[in-house]
Length: 407
Image (cartoon, rainbow, N blue to C red; front, top):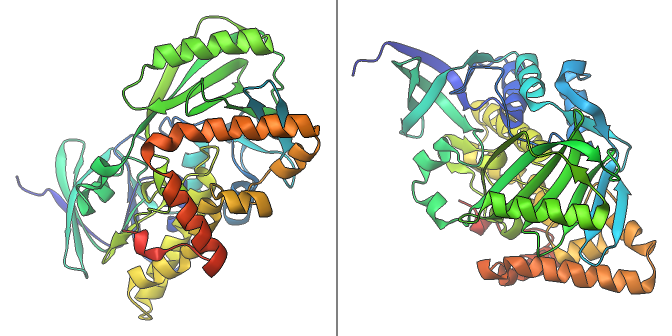
């Protein structure tokens, strides 16, 4: 097959989400020739709750400016998170720093990538790459035609099922426990749940990840469970549960959406950052916050990837050495959220869980902790417990997590 066109660039970024926009902003501002590709036509739909953390909000404001109204859903903001325990206890927790935006990812992602001023090639699918460590050759397809990119560096910011990661580490995805995360949309008949909050159920009978929040006059019900389970079964159970326990009455679902995710890398410190001149960042690298909010860590890790490339081009050190040195801070911030020792002795989340627990009676505190332990036991089958404890102790003793566990 003949190549129709060759593009020569300093950096090729695969993906056009938050990690891509953050990396592109750094690189374009440094005067580099950068192209970002996406297999979809932009602006594209993105399956996401849209609830942004305070840290992610600060990053957007500082780097891209105020969000336009079209980049927000209704309600336009979120005050915080409410945990609902299986024993019936509910604990609302406001975000530190006040409410944060409720992003409409189709338009907020497009706004950010445009604000980065990167050259975007949409409807361009990544097919594969080869590199000698100095120059990468990336094969792609644009509207049925074969194209090639020649880049000094490649940044894979292409999500949990990253084709770039698969090209660098073909066997990696087979080693991961995958989860199905699906959400359905219902018109509301009656809903006592406060629409200013993102609601999360710590209830082992409902599944590994169960949530709800309001959007555009509808209620989103989300379920997460090990791959192989039934969306319909989990969803039906959730609808019945919130009707009985919370008085929520809904019309039949109008639509559903979902995808495959892996929560493991952040939990057990098994990130993937690439090799040679190929950098992997954002959720492709394994970053995922505890409540499955991946935008803030995508923004920060993407920016770090961009900065690493700039430093490497200035001739300081190899790009992987720079990237892995700087990414330590983001690893600590993400993995701390799952570290039981840090959860007890430090404020590692952006809403004050410890303060919320203190407001409960001693009896309810014990019930909440018992529910939390039952919920965590869901993950016992994955053999993560020993790894979590080991990494937690290392963090306590040395102040950091092991870099030897990274790819």
